Image 1: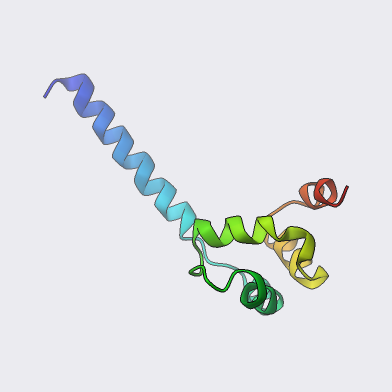
Image 2: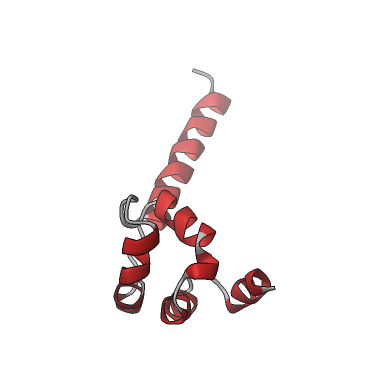
Length: 88
């Protein structure tokens, strides 16, 4: 194995590990509390803290309760600017 390939492999594994750590981020208590009903109604088929769930919640963004959206914004899961763009 040449040094370039070995370095590339190590870099790739490091990035994959970092991405997994970021994805494993837990939802805040507020998101858990205020989005529970929305989760069950729209995205209950998806596992918690998965990319599938995040995608499902995004697809159903216009239908989510105001309290859930507020909790998602406050926790940094989405931005107020993004929510505003979606409304228009």
